[in-house]
Length: 138
Image (cartoon, rainbow, N blue to C red; front, side, top):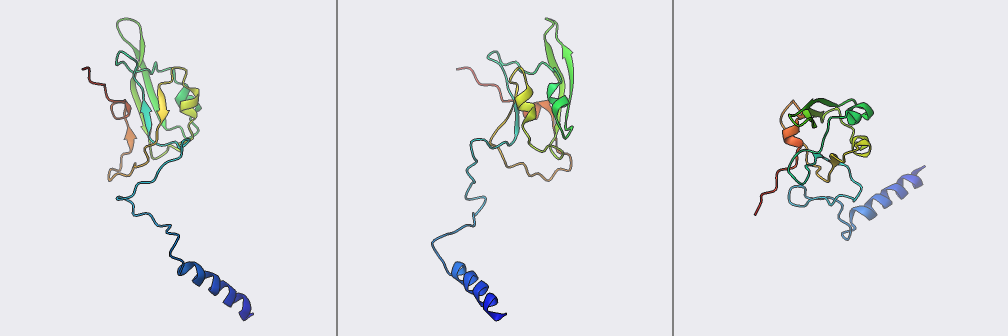
């Protein structure tokens, strides 16, 4: 009865005094390198002219299992569709990537960003927060 206890204690002490393998990461100073298929923060894309690619087809909100995407479509003067409002509730999102897969315009991507912590209670990301910033022309 005491032999298994001593074997477990010996195993614990063996790993406790082993200096070659450090597992703990000092977080703000050391950043985690994400894997290539990691799904993090959402990002709405723009086309070459700087317009948003989303045409508010609604496929992303339909396929979302967490029902965290709300969007409302509209048309401009030229008859082009765009998302009047596009919101993602990040507290409900499970980062499954279905919205990225189903988008016919390749307007939404889940990028490598993983630092999503915030002091705000409201974690609804609107279109302005999700859109890729405009590139400055040289």
